[in-house]
Image 1 (cartoon, rainbow over the protein chains, first blue to last red):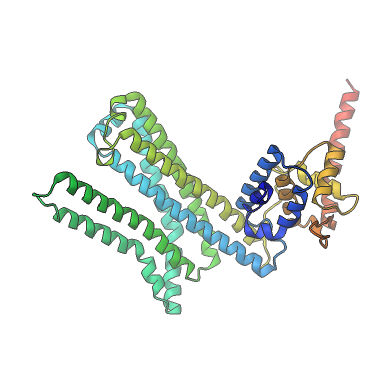
Image 2 (image 1 turned 45 degrees about the horizontal axis):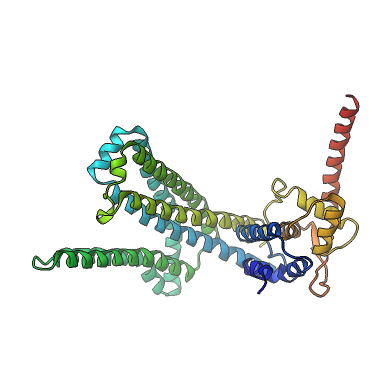
Length: 307
Length: 103
């Protein structure tokens, strides 16, 4: 497979169906230079960020459906990215709950400010997700009751069920502490189960919600509306990410001993935990930004396409 | 479809429209023509990004494919848009030249 063909395969499907053959005909005219290869790669990014391009050959109904599905997919992707961000945020909260960090934040104004920004950003993001997501959740319930497809209701309750299972497992683990057991073995087993259940719940919850939404009839206007608060949520995620980075750098500069200590979750390296949290937040934020751009493009196309 | 974004793709779309002003052309012919008259090499990603936008805006339209090559031609809106763009470039150039003449 030639590099040209491989790069063309990275374009969205509807784009490939419309332009791939003629683009390949152009690319075969001369050897692909590095500049043209990069140009093609940026063209791939551009096509993914503007999903309405390449749909001009589609019948109107298919084009509208394509844009509707893209908008819905973008919102669901953004929701999943937000959940991933929250998981990283929980890590940050656990990291900073020790008194050493509170004292450092009180002594260093930049650390205190960035910590407050993290809290403010987290609250705004949560509210924005609720404002955009709750009308969709109600639409899922209405659709489920109207069509008598109660499976969607069970899926929508997925996060609650996952939380109950997680809570129940945590309580069971506490109760299962055996005084005669080998401490290291017990600690390792308990932590493994705890983390396993935590990540399983974190993955299962958004997946269940996504399936509930996909199986339901959601009015288009709710998706249009949801994108606006979801943009705010993405901006808040960006704020929290930047604040978390500055917080860590301030800690490194002002209290290097604490930064290099082992105050991370389960006694792991503080700096290592911070880096992992930042990486996870950054990945979630990038996914959210891409989803917003795709969603906005689809939303604009839907608003200007005659129904 | 969303509004044509001139700020991002100001040059390639106008050059493509100008290239199509003397008749329909397929992608590679457009690319070569622009290289000949403007000395600008449009990468394949830029070329087809601009073609897709121009098509979405109804400024160009595809003709029947000739094997794997598909020619494009200007629509009435495309002609009007190109005229508007070139007129504004012309008045800008005239103004600049007139000022230079006064130096």
